[in-house]
Length: 494
Length: 83
Image 1: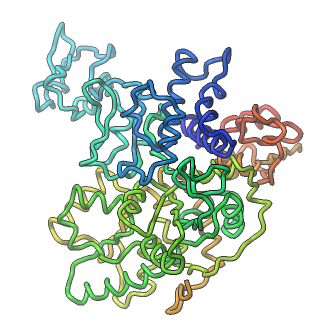
Image 2: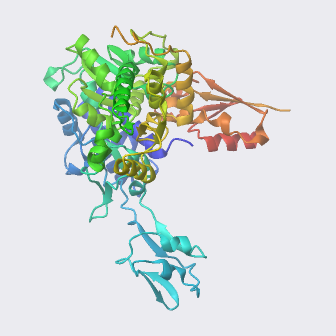
Image 3: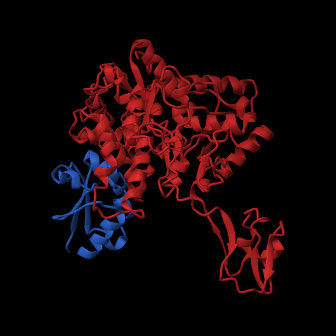
């Protein structure tokens, strides 16, 4: 697997936004990005003409500045967007946005009969269709789109494989049917259903789905040459909280990474894995209590996407879900206690954590791995050349292994008194969602601790991951091997 | 028998712009190349800096030649040609 061109382009835009921010003339240079990236006379890489390419880049920049592309009236200058971003107090609670210019409005999801149809005598397609959607015209089958429900039964039975289905990749990627084409034919997110897992971001081959970045909200607190007159309050104590999935996402080890993050302008860095150590202890106690009271099972609750899923699609599972707080909750609380004036920034693998942060006053902002990566590149920081800086508090083996599928269950098992039989949900998809629904309904499942991770492979499979899950797994394993087992006093002293 | 040295740049830009994926090369190397290709993760090869605006990370150095915009497919194709 190699990096997708659409993702590459997204990172390139982020790097340019950051460079413009630190250039000394943010408002002018942000406006010039589409022209710098696609100068006059340049051969057009992807789309019909250079003007469309620039229009798409402009929309990507709007998302990069943290605004909804859907609300754009096309007449507004990028400099005005930049100004608004600088004076913004709180970013939006809806973290995703779709660029209509990039969303090709691909053909609607439908099943149709191709020329390969031989007009056979068996007519299995007509027989299996429960909706009477298959007609026969001149001996060949034709599907009535008004009656067809896309069940694909006919696709499966055709002996010539003559029936094809067009796929809308974002709709296909979404596990909860939250992204749909609107009447104009462009994808639209239904936030009543969306669990913010970010699978559509990775799914769209046109790179049309974006996270509304909170980068500017963070950068404006850095020393950038901008002043209060520009709407920024710089020189603040800004603390980065790095998610346990970060090992392997960047070159070097997490100690070099700490130095690199501080070089970008942060004042300090804490491992969220330290918060995971508190989660593990509390969750083990809660698990034992629930088992003593005779509960059939308990599900974990650290995945923000799963919490959204439960709230919006399966409220019946709530009573089985652990009430223990997330690693981010505990570490942010500790950091704010120790540094009440500091600004906390969670460095995240996924979009879903933005919603958790939005409702937690101790977490001021979230930026993801791609955005942090762009910041390193824009500031020319060579991580492998950075010296190692120790963390004030070192996290445990178990806490550092939290981001890998089955890592949470193993961590709880290391402290719980009741023997644990884990049931691992390695990624929310239609199949695993069904097993969760069944578990909630029948009040049983084949295990007593259900670990739910929204993304396949765990947090290392998040939508903003920089490396392949295998590479991340190796890096986390190496870090876990040099870490200490969790003990009663692990994490004290934060 | 001739062996080839493949240096994958693990400089910050290269890593973030795609060489993180190239680390899988060693695992998926076709058996016909086995023992003939030496894959090394390498500190920044200095290409992004020297190419400036025109830089196209990730970079891979195959023996003495530099490959830009490297993907797994491109690297494998190159090795095939050289061997």
